[in-house]
Length: 104
Image: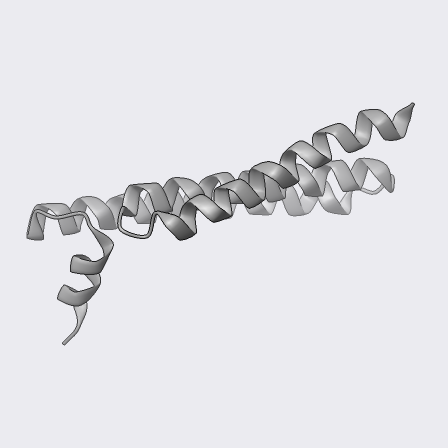
């Protein structure tokens, strides 16, 4: 009974993780899509850590989850501020044009 309750969210989270990873790989041209994909991947990893910490009766996974959420918040704030800065300077948001403009 417990394993059924445990494995259903785990499989859903793993499916979401790989689906988002595939979405990030296929949507390389859009920077907002890449940033959102990274956020969803970090949330999936957080949920996996919490589920595994419940399974093994340890708090370590939950502590790692808090650190991952903090890193995800910093990454989204930094990424969005860089995205706004590049849009104001260049007027474009595609990743290939942005990366080619960064070359010296």
